[in-house]
Image (cartoon, rainbow, N blue to C red):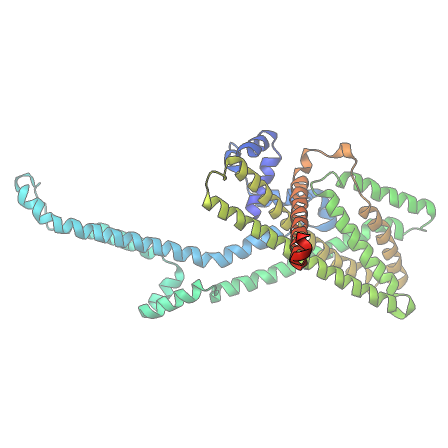
Length: 424
């Protein structure tokens, strides 16, 4: 999926390729030098370098690819081993057939036989070479099974267990090691972002916080927004940041009043928001998967209705759905990290409570400005292609769901209407 998004970015950011894509689909919209690494484009799609000081580097793409590499490695090795064994089997059959035909050839062409320089087996060398190649192509797991002296039945049983989706001990260890690495990287990311956030709001918290200073602080944030909103998905990221800042800061401020009762309800509301975001992220991914499967079925079925235009339309729809899923996942990561950042900034017991309250007020000021960020109509351009693509896919989903509800409503109404009333 991430690869598809990266390729789509390169197509949509090039006017000529985009025209080819709209007419003929992605197969006719490939750059001259081929597509570049999708991981680089993934970060460009969602804000790029401009947002690094605010949200850090989004790790969704890296986490997905690394996990897939680990879990898929054994499967790929098994496929290579099976292919090598199949080649060896075919070669042996061909060689055996050649040996059985050899006596007949000798009987009819005895006079044309070249001189023999010594005893040799014409089939032993290629057999040995291919046999060695097959062994080399086998996975390390196969080699270990042979060294352990497992029977053929035991080998087959272990292979079946693998195909059922089980991970080897080595894979589990690699996944566990990567999880520790990922956890450490996240902690470092949170620490770095917390320090940068404290520095950013210190221009207000470390002053007398007069009306003039507050206006200057607000203007500084607005100038940042003017630049950031023009980035790819800039508005969506700004809104996500603002929402998190306001939620966490408001919850902290309320917890200081009324013996913490208001803070309790704020935290409860935050948990409800988190649950909603989790469900939206999952449902968006499921919707993308279903659309991909729908397109695969239509492509397999083919027929006159499956034209190049229809295929291009579905490819655009699928890309939009996948993009929506990728954005929901990225937004979930952004807000999850920022919640930890805000907790670190607001709940650091080594800092006086009054100072932490000032930090919370600064976050509310900045968060409100981020949440209100918007673009003027003339500021919309080709670099917003991905946002438009996602918006189209989301709006079509809404329309489809509305049609389904209306159809279901009409159907239930017809079923509940008595035949006499319908005929009259």
